[in-house]
Image 1 (cartoon, one colour):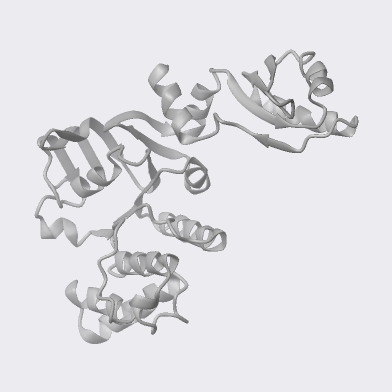
Image 2 (cartoon, rainbow, N blue to C red):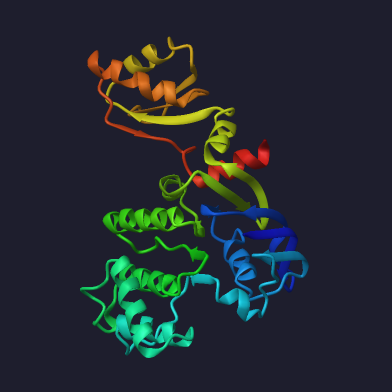
Length: 304
């Protein structure tokens, strides 16, 4: 549905995206990258708000730039708010439906239906000025889907949602994907992406570093030593046991003596074996991994 071929766009001396080539089909695809990676620039290219300096962008076979025929097939939830704050949520979504060309009765029907799908029916008649960040995100999704677009683009849509709201939002995206829609969701949080989809595009400093199934990226990362920090009141006793495990590459004691850092190439096997130590009376108070974050993913991909 969406094709980018050797696309670059820059703002003066600053590069937004650099020589990006990819194809995005039906289902949920995550556009993953740190802040400033070029995600919003890529969204704006696809939605026709800006034109590529080099390369070509095609949405359903057409150039999206300043193309109303393409706009009718797109739903867009931007990363920034642009509300009429004195309106209610229902008035705003209804207005968006009217601007899309629907009659007044049809606009009201579609607005009510979209608001209900995003779980905002009980709050839709409150003024937008009093909405929380999460409520604003839901209303933006409602206006993006009210005209039943074939493609929906969501720029950091989970920002401001509580855990329950995120779960509901992700379930809704899956339902929309099951209906045959193509959904592109940008995020800078790896954990969020893993709950949404396995299909990803990884942007780093404007370049597309990896595409495809998230499990493949995970396998690539696991080729490198994986660091895990363990908090324990008995670090030396725990270290003496860990060095016996063949999949543990190294064990080091942190300054202060209340934690260990280990390296392993088989993190799943390591985590699966930890309960044995707890059952044997070795206390583990906390676990964390400096490598289980998006920054480390990009570092590994750049080094690979």
